[in-house]
Length: 190
Image (cartoon, rainbow, N blue to C red; front, side):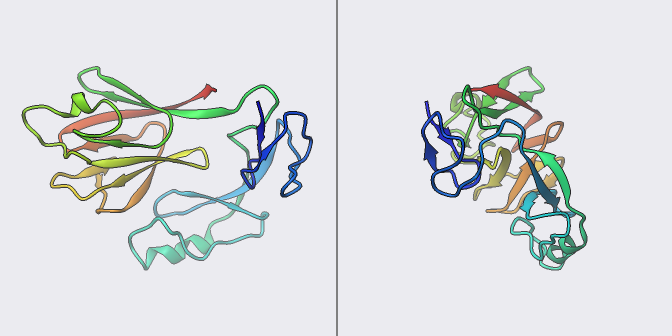
């Protein structure tokens, strides 16, 4: 097994104490500074408590993008902890009102011809498109991106425009056409 640097994503030998590429020290408890976009909630890594970000690359509304510069950074524990034993990754659990549970660990396409549970989305009503939306795991956070479809993708009843990516948080509600899912995010060891 090897160690993947959380900073530069370079592959290192198991016994490495520092990353050969960037010099980052491997530790089980690493704190980083982050800042939230006040519009969409996306988290960004920043250098320190005095940092600001001028533009959120996730928001639709150009005017709201500039509100992020007023947000205050906060210190948090890194979610993807590098250790000799394992890498902890989040699992997205979608529970539909019928009781159907879909577990996602990584990137995928949801829809009638998607990568995950396509037979569940392929019913006679055909409200869900063949490729309805993308689920993206990036920096240990899940995002949903709406693909060109007839019926909408929503987060907490907010419609996502085509090609727009929004963060998915634990406790959110994800709507894919006529299917409504309650979201939970859990850690799973690999």
